[in-house]
Length: 405
Image (cartoon, rainbow, N blue to C red; front, side, top):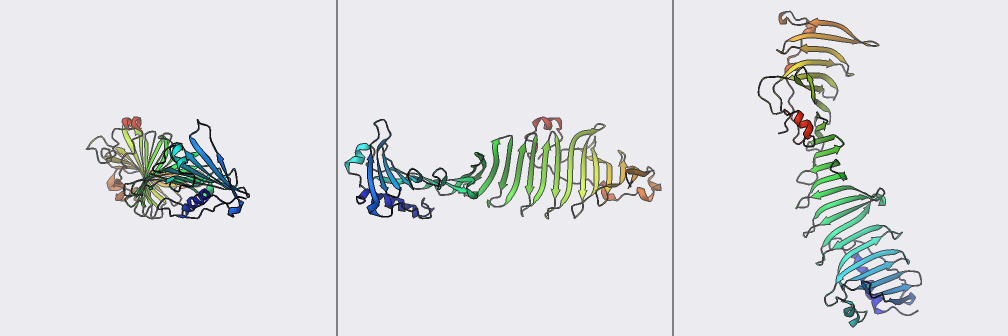
């Protein structure tokens, strides 16, 4: 077989450029040259038709089925394709035009062995064993700075693409699901390269999940989840545990407050339901173990200034005490003036039964069973996370007292 021409040697040098580092835009591993020896190689020249965007294609092949194509383009750029074996593409490289090489004539004037034909690398794509799926992809600007980098992840089922600014910092990342052919998530970054927000389920503005991060780009501070007629916000402690989870659905707002150890402390249900003419707020209290031990229901009063939660002063209406299993044991009913009116005791056999009702209007003659701890009268303090009602304009108009300041 004829010996390798100088062009093949130049191509081999080009292929070896893959061993450079990720920082300067090359792969961080070796890309093997598919030729075992010079004696096994031969060269072919392909001249495309005049209407093609190619000037010429030179193919160097060997007896084992490997090949390298170097393609001179009319715009002055060069493409190098490595097959292993033919026709399966192993690596695809595109070079920017080099100075002085801008058309087919300039490529031909100095012969095929001119080492200056390649400009800076523009794109580099390494495919998998099938030659159909991209394993690593890199794109560079004319100055040689990395612009985009893609890699297969999670066993080849997904692809992650990172976009870089002029300083080499990531500005945006996308994760694409190759099984379902959909964008799984998108992550945006601040100007200093720290992570700002990750959004998944990018099908529409009506259906998404978002994670917001602190200035260090590592600490999760808030989550948003939106689906059909439902929007939820979760605020986090510094340790990443949920501090409060708020949900808006068809005008109903539900808040769950957690302790830093993840146990539930308080649940608040803000409902458009009315008792008489008053709005109702339901509180569910939990002990240190996260078990429900008390439920209180408050009605919005008709007097007084609107508080920070968007309500006029609330008046205690009912208190339900529960046992360790969450079953009610005692119900206390209060009048509009705060007077304890009635106490109902419950016992559990096969069915729920009321054991007795005790009228408690006369405070000077309260039975022991009618006495209630003073803390029942303390309205739990809570704050509605800002923006909870931003997707529920119609519901918010129906409940003008709900504010999110």
